[in-house]
Image 1 (cartoon, rainbow, N blue to C red):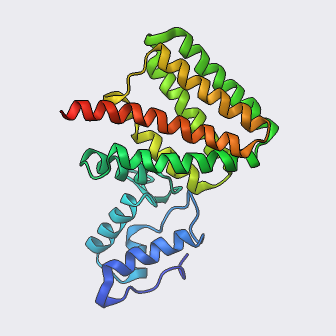
Image 2 (image 1 turned 90 degrees about the vertical axis):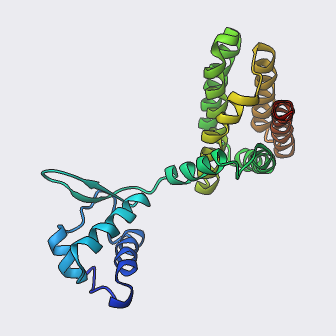
Length: 244
């Protein structure tokens, strides 16, 4: 690891320190769980001050690339990159009203159709078993009625995220995870979800899965898009009523 870093460029020392450590992680020279050299050693390698190094490490921690552990045995440890920061950023955009329900609805209609179509083309027998269990969970919630709305929405989310995982595409997985982690805010505010709506939602999901199991890519995608459009429409009506 002694040859992993070089003296930072003096005209942009802070940025260079961040970039060197970041590139070492991205390129795989530093792997998940690896511990960066001790502060004194790292400072000497990069020829930088303690304050600059610490600030650079804080930036890398904010990016989710490292975790800084305190106390005995502490230090900077490389961690797996996750979509958590994307989720947090979208959450802030929604809360600051820079991303509206209409924006999310427009995005979901197209992306969720594409996801279902791709998932159908890549469906494995093991996926069918997983979807069967997830649908059973949703049915139980729908049967319980109004007391199980929160559980039903979680079951609905799990089914949509299962479709994303079936694509095997990490971009779809990350994006839909981010969307479904944040759209609950709109569900709680604008979606009337009682027993009739739960049954309607469940029927759509059952139809999507049935088409997927038959390998009918076109039908599965069309049902998915219609499903998302209809429930987005319900929320948009309530949002407009709320604004009046």
